[in-house]
Length: 149
Length: 352
Image (cartoon, rainbow over all chains, first blue to last red; front, side):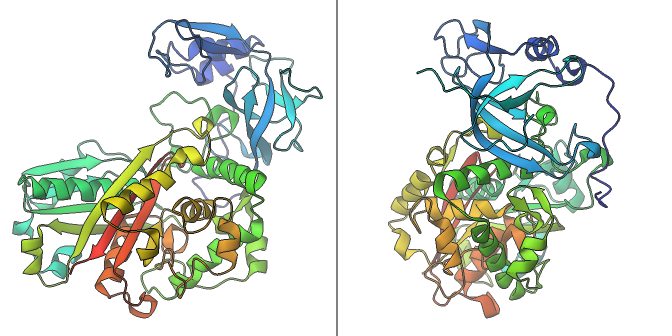
């Protein structure tokens, strides 16, 4: 709908999310895992902190010993926005869509699109994979369960 | 050239050059390219990229330190580019992820506006900030721009027109976003001794303090962790000032939410009260500390804060025309860039 030629429709996407988004050996396991229907997060082998995004070293203690842990994908909405403009990777046909930052129970903040557009800050959510996770990123859906504390 | 003319200096006087390289289409070795294009041969030159308005502060600091240490005697800091028209078709707005592994853009957090929208949603949830408050920021900037012949957008709008402007990334509308323009600005830095002989009254760089908290918006932790509060206090303390001594401030307002956060964190009002502060005229000319008297990035145009610094200089020289803050002696530049992640405060004072 935009008359701004710089914000045009994205190219048709027929590649797997792994091919599209993995830019190096460090990011590859993360995207490959999502493409296989599982969320994994990097964890420091030395100080045991879980962090996002994947790095070659732990941002907390600089250890280079990095492991991956499986995440339940459950968390709380920290911020949200309904987006009406197509930037990088988003096609005009998708507009508007809702996106947010999610505080996962593992203690990291993850970006993600919403399955339920009416999710609000503070709502509990759970990552939901599509039927073909190779081609669709998972989205956060409402999750009616309180955090274990 | 205009900055040098204004100072009464010529091209042969420049021996230092600092710049912010173009962002729409990055050019490696830009400081060298610029010097060669201008036919000058500085003895000290570099490109700086500290993020947003922190870049101009970093350039000014580089100039001050180069002059103080004797590396050069007259340094120019400059930035300019066809920011609006110069983007490649593939650029699709400023995605800020080129050449860096992107973990947010695939999920739709690409343009800067989405990142700031998320922060705005957070500010609203934490402090009850309203859309009317964001509107008040946009309208104040426009009222100031109306007094500034150099501003890009100068026509006033009503609150109804604000609410009619199209949503970009909620809660931000079109009128919450800065005006992307083609343009340029430059400042000349030299020693006090040299400045005393020049055509215009000089403005002193009093102090600077900054803090880098994050790059990607997903790494934002809290408004507290931006440490704008601490940076402001450090800059004021180093200059022997308190916030009540500040006559005006120019703050990085790429989006309306930024202005609210800056006035809160600078200590002009309590945290979370930026909305009511803006709605009661706290930002406006005539108040105790007018904000962005030139119209800011919102209405004057987005040139990464270079024109913020120029406005502070004009105000302190008493040359701001109908938007002059009477008796302005101290101005703060506050701002940062990226996704609100690197912020600094610089105090400038009228030379006495």
